[in-house]
Image 1 (spheres, rainbow, N blue to C red):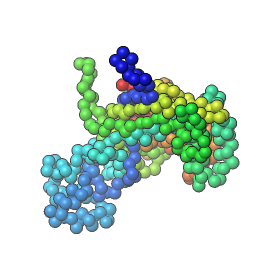
Image 2: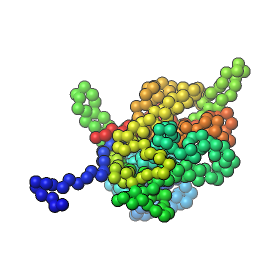
Image 3: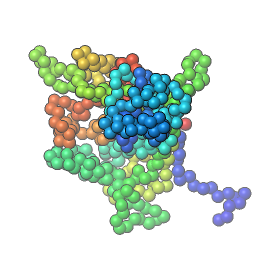
Image 4: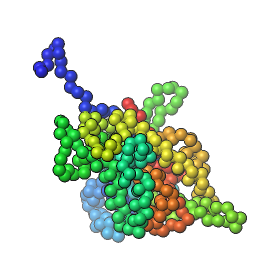
Length: 431
């Protein structure tokens, strides 16, 4: 058939594409480098700087300070005093040093304490904070796996992949899980996502095909987010203030836990405990966007002999699945934070988390991503028996008798010293 003005050929719509606005109170996505040494960042009372080390080395060479810089690197020492010697006490306000201390590497410092072992956030090739599409897609994948197991009858999940059988296999293999935890997870994901045949142009795939090719998540593509660049959102309402968004901060993170021990009166003592804090570079008041693409034609290629069905056909379906997973996580986290007791002796007060952050019964977020999401956000563990979760935790990590699984939670301390945020919660809005 030939296209004419009277009889135009209509190209079939094989892709559904949505721009998604992503907002978050605070989050951290780790980079390839888990921690920075003291010489790789500089801290003042109010800011943390990540210098361009090549440019810094050249500038110090011109000032005869290169050997001292190398010595401090070898000894993993801080370089703040060296900067003052080379560039003056007011080095951070010297505009000539902007190439050494780019704006994309400057964060607000939310603590008066000396920062040690700083955990940097991931950056793109231009040094800007962003959220990789792989991080978002990985969280979506977990949400879909969880949803399939939660509704296993509805989607005819095969018996070998149902929760009861997964629990039986895990109980039988608990002793070997420390060495085979990844394989156990891979086997589960393969049984849910990859055991499909491909039907294309009337033909069924034959012979051996790599499981990555028969994974129906191939039909979903997620772009990296737009750079998380500090800016001002102008208010459309004269009664509300403009809002600063995408603010890079270095925050103190409390990793808390509690033990179920009995008091003399027989009550459970759930007093909060924590060890050393973590200092992490984070994005505060995140406001960015990414694109979610569903190849609807490709999705139609995937079929199974056991009649298990894929739980979505549209992007709206995918977002609803994520929302349900988020709600279940939210309710579980609410229970944790309402159970833990403040510990004045260690300056641990969680009222802002339990009474403010987790105040609503209905989860206001669409998913949880990145660092701090924990076992419940990155696995299907919420579908497993609580006692089994504890056994898996003890087998794969350190024994923690009387602790629930997961044992600990991460909470972010704000600039006023309040334990204020649970990291990683994000909202999705279709634009």
